[in-house]
Image (cartoon, rainbow, N blue to C red; front, side, top):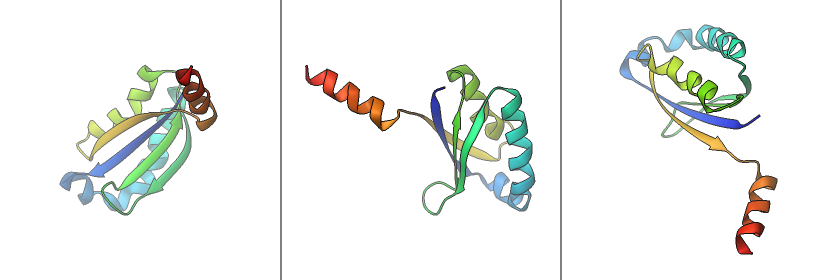
Length: 98
């Protein structure tokens, strides 16, 4: 399954509820599982973003559900990337060279 990374930056509204983050994470993880998404990593960050989630989803439509769950309640702004395994990327680089 494709891997995705979602970075989250709390909004001022999200900061008001930050003490509930553990509960919200568990609820969100369960909802994601129902959507066919497997969370492989979840981290709090120091820097530009506040949290990072790494997950596998069947496709980009399913993957879009993860950041939408944060945006729906106004708790955070998200940025999502598709992650390519390094071995696959290395093969692409060799093929591009010709």
